[in-house]
Length: 206
Image (cartoon, rainbow, N blue to C red):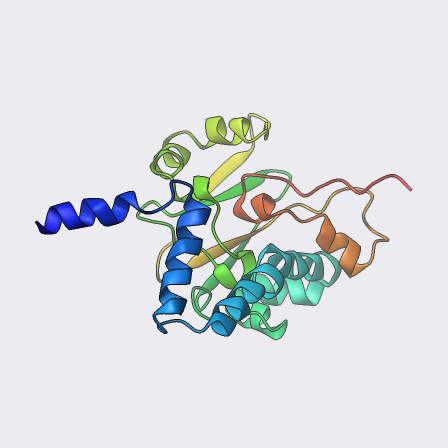
């Protein structure tokens, strides 16, 4: 009887995930279990205050300020906190830097540990079993599928993010960006470039 009830309740949920979330939210609000204002505040936080734009500002600062870069590489948690980014899922941060001869890529082989304060919500592919397994066995092949073709002599380092340590990749600064402002530099930093499955964007001519 219980199984029949569960199946019936599941059948009433919309098939689209977004609609399911909305249906559950509406039900919880109607029962007085969730405050709509709290939900709106959380959505606003993850859309506008917590996300890749935070990590992009960290990278832009590291590109333009050698002293900050040194602090970031020595103690990423403290250096990131200097810019006001900290909290759950970002307590123990390590920054790793891409160079002309080294490329870093991050994975969580056990689940989906991810630095939420600087990168926001993890992308679906980051949590997939396929990515978690393949990037360890064949990082060069996985990077090629993301559009990154590295020289044969480039060392690829794969970092396993855990509940104790989370990583932030500092991508190489693109050529021609020397005179750009911090805000413009930050606009070149993509989420994937801070995971290692992407590169920083090239500045537009002019």
